[in-house]
Image (cartoon, rainbow, N blue to C red; front, side, top):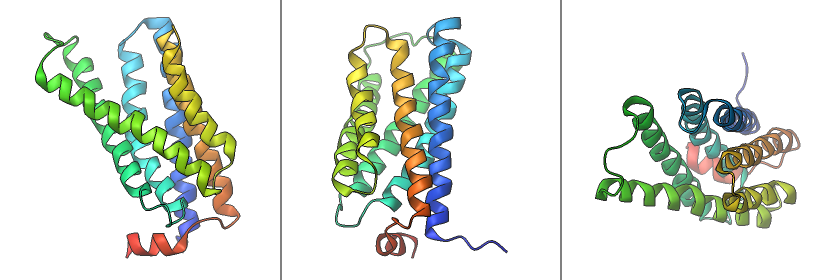
Amino acid sequence: MIKMTVERFVQWFGAVCILAGLARIGMTPSNLVWGTDSPMELMFAMIACVLMAIGTFGVFLALPSRFGVSLWTVLAIIIGNMMTLCVLYGRAAYGEYPGNDTLAESIVGLIMTVGVLGGTLVLSVLMWRSNVFPRWSALLHILMLVSMALPYEAYFASFWGAAYVGMGICMVKNAKHGSVNHEQTARVLG
């Protein structure tokens, strides 16, 4: 019988982050080959959204408890990813939306932006300050945010995926070296 320790949970969440990053990276070649919002690109995007929502929770388990805002940050990213999943499913199922300026679309867009991008900015600061993740992992998240300004929007997904792959690798490696916060995890898991 395999005993599931906190370190093992963080390693599994790290492996999910790696898969999520690879799925997000898969969006870029799909976009370049078949075009924006092609069924292949949307498939990679939907898989990445689900895996990112799941894997991001492992970051909360790995961060020290003195950073109390980390739960809210992780929840914002998870909600942002799930809202993005809803929008992507709508595009895959129905094609383009008839009106791009409806109130519902504006609200969903605001929640996605605050959740994913705002959450990523706060998460990168928490990762930098916590000394649990190496500095380069936090810098990958900042680079992902900066890459939004690139003229070729297809490459943004690659930077986003690389940030999650790097974070997942750190979670798998750091959990092996005992840098997981047991007090916070015990509080959350009961």
